[in-house]
Amino acid sequence: MTRTSLFAVLQEEDYEELRKEIEQTTKFKLAIEGIYKWIVFLPSKVDSQNQEPTRYFGCFEKNDEMKVRGLEYGRHDTPIYFKKCQEQILKELSKWIPNSS
Image (cartoon, rainbow, N blue to C red; front, side, top):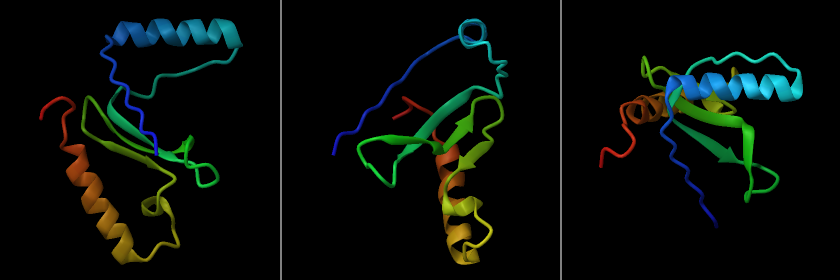
């Protein structure tokens, strides 16, 4: 199994410049929701060698708020025990600061 990590250190204005460039190229309007302190894209259920852009979790830089997509945690039909378990794990992960260890 191959794992790939990418750490980039950018300034806020770098993101704004990239947003503008993408808008000009694609003619789609974009908004910057926030800057992630870290983000994890989960493997595709069909092809585990590829990450799925709709299955991820991450922690925003400014307020340590978590954003979760595509996990059982966000589903309405997930048993409460599993939701609470994932919630606790995500809370602990949100405290992690990249390059702190």
